[in-house]
Each structure stands twice: as C-alpha cells, then as structure tokens.
Image (cartoon, rainbow over all chains, first blue to last red; front, side, top):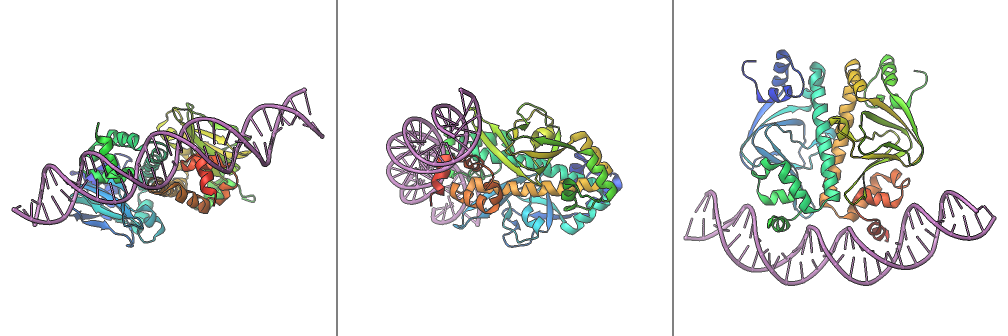
Length: 190
Length: 190
DNA sequence: CGCGACGTTGATTTGCCTCAACGATTGTGG
DNA sequence: CCACAATCGTTGAGGCAAATCAACGTCGCG
C-alpha cells in the first residue's frame, strides 16, 4: 500500500499482513468521527463492534446505584476501547463510552470480524496477542487496587500514563484510581 | 478417541478438534502431579509453561516488601493458572503457584505451544477465547476492588465461587478479597 | 459579565487495619 | 493414645486512610 492506513500500520506492528490481507481487513472496518462529549456507546445499547482509536481520547465508565460515574478505562491513539463483556455475551451494554476530545475510531461488526478470523488467520493471532497483554495489564491493576494505597496507585499512574494524565481532567483520574477528587488533590499537595 | 482425556474434553468444549488434532495437542502436554503445599512455580524462576488443572486446587500469590502474601488467583478443575506476565515477557516469575490439595496439572512449553498454534489453528482460537473471558472477569474484579466495599466483594465471591469457598481456608479468601482475616470474620458475623 | 466546570481546603465520619489475646481444631512425636 | 504445638478463626481496643460534606477560589466560555 502506497499510503499506510493507521489501523493497518497498528496491526502490522504486531503480526504480518500481506497487502492483499491488509486490503481485506480495511474493508471490514467503518470509520466513525466523534465530537467532544459525544457518546460512542450508552448503557442498554447493544455492543456489536470492536473499536480502534485512530485519533483522540475516550473513556468508558458505568453508573452505580447512586448515579455516580466510575471510569473503567481511558483510550487514546492506537488503543482499543469497548464494553467487551456486552460484546462477547451479546447483552445490553453496562458501560458508556464517550469522547473526551474530537476523535476518529474504526469499528468492525462482530459477525464481520468472525469471518475475518477465518479469511485472515493473522487477525485471530493479532487479537489473541492484544487481549493477552490487556489481560496482564488488568491483573496488574487488580493487584494495585487491592493491595496498594491511593498514593502508590497515583504514582504508578503518573509514571505509566503520563500522556493520558495531561489530557483528561483531574477528577476523572481520581475516578479511574477509585478515589475522590478531594483525596487526589490532597495527595498532589507535596 | 475411545477415552476422552480431560484436557482434550475441555478444549473441545470451546472449539472443534479432529481426532488427529486432539492427538497432536495431547502429545505436546506433560503431566505433573503435585502433593499438597508443593510449589509449581516460585518467585524468580522462569515461567515457560501454560498450565491446565485436571484435578485439585491451587493458588497463585506474591509477597510484598513486608513479606506478606497476597493471593492473585485460585484455580480448580478445568481452570488455567500461570504467571502470565512472566510467561509472556520471559522474565523471572513474581508469583508463587502452590497446590492447596493434591493436584494434577498438564503443562505445555511456550515454544511447543507456538508451534501448536500453527499446526492446529483451533488452538490459537481456543486461547483467544479463554483469555478473552479471563480478561472480562479480571475487569469485573477491578471494578469491584475499586468501587465496592469489602462486604459487597465477599457476597459476590460467595455467589460466584461457592465451590472454591468450601475448599480453601478463610484467611486465603480474605487475602484474595484484599482484606484482613479479622475483617472478614467481622463481616461473616451476621 | 456571569455562570458552570473544576480544583482546593478543612471538619467530621467511617471502613478497615493493626495489634494482642484467646478458643477450637488438627496433627504430630514421644 | 495422649500431650503439646501449630494452624486457624474470633473478639475487642485503638488508630489511620480515605470518604463525605460544605464552602470557597479560579478559570474558560457563552
């Protein structure tokens, strides 16, 4: 391909893809542009797509019984974001996914992706590797949530997600870390 | 196969496997029997195998700077257990894996498994699906650790892991939930 | 300009931890 | 087979980390 599409470039950074396969993959995805604060998914909706972020910044969160938001994940360029549970079980989404900046995402429908796994076996491998890493990261976050203090978690976040820290408001970081904005403010004061 | 091996039966519950493929898969795995309290993996060792539990009960945990144990996972029949981070990055294990009962596990070496993914594509699919589910479960646990009280987490554990609750001592459940044995005892008192 | 969104500060409360002590049960060696 | 130790669960007192609540300052934007 003369011009290397961001989605294809990302996939090729993990697995090999022939030009022909790249073309097949790209045709399966649809582009979606989002304005700031626009929702990509809301609670109760079906979650039938896998989503890749070409540009921008998004968050996924859920509402508890008191109506309070709890952020599950941030996503920026070259990341994936989804309500994977709803996607896999084909149940209504429990998560909201919202753009925090004007964003561009590429989506593929579950059924089309299943076909793609057969047409292009490298895609099955690609997703296995991506999810493997995400799983390890998730377990790491678990160990932190269970066994570290808020301060330790915040330091870890600063080290590993500097780029995100600069793009999202502080109260959302607090929510992601599972603490109150007031407490995060107190931690930062030194 | 006249006699259906537990490992193959488990894989076939997720993906299709021809008799020939089943044979190939089985030959790649090695059986390992463990006595109670025996370690399958210790901190600092290389973690080069994927591990399937045919029988028994195991736990994975790490030690913090104070030398206290923190349980990351329990595993029983038909589950998988590993230090996946160490496995993937080929770095020394940070986790211990220990049998809580006499156990039988089946292990496959990383290199052999990579070959298997090519010989038997259904295995690549199998692992993708398994890890996908594990990832969703891990995220669920995250949301609980961050946004629910110890009591809520304990109730959830009782509902979803009744079989494990009956097989492991209470202080290990406390560790898994990220609370002290004393506090779990207090929660149970009603 | 005025309003809403965001961050900060301090007082009070609460969930959970720490530490110490004490039964009950299990298992083990004499 | 018994005595003793180790393991496990429980109880209670005191302390600390983080939440809650209320108030206030600042900034950006319609």
